[in-house]
Image (cartoon, rainbow, N blue to C red; front, side):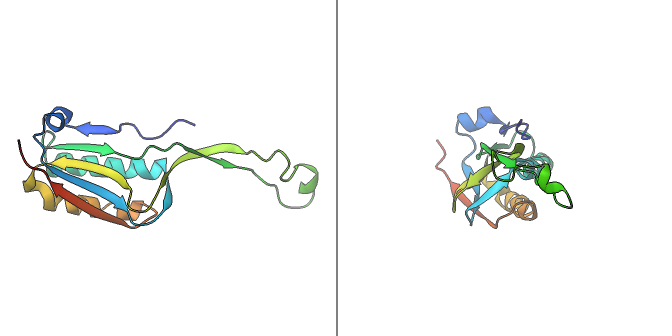
Length: 148
């Protein structure tokens, strides 16, 4: 199945490569969990929209760190009268693909944002607003790098 995430790197990529964005912020999972690609895409859209409004298009770099490699499959089972003659149970039960997900371990980053020091509080609010879209509780870590 195709992955629903449209972009993985957004914002001012050149400023990040040149070292102009000295504040790094990670959204990390507190639990080991599987996150579906449609949940990641919903979070990506919300974060990107709010970053462009509150921080400005040239003042951030945003990256979706985790890629949904895991293919989710479903072995559809029939129920009701006469259903036993139409299916094979667990024989050849490989299933059909129904979606993609990423496996996130405890304390692994899901999203990464680089910006300047003045926008830390805005970005914390933006990252806290996506917690309802994810199946795990999240924490926000940030680091201020030395400017060159």
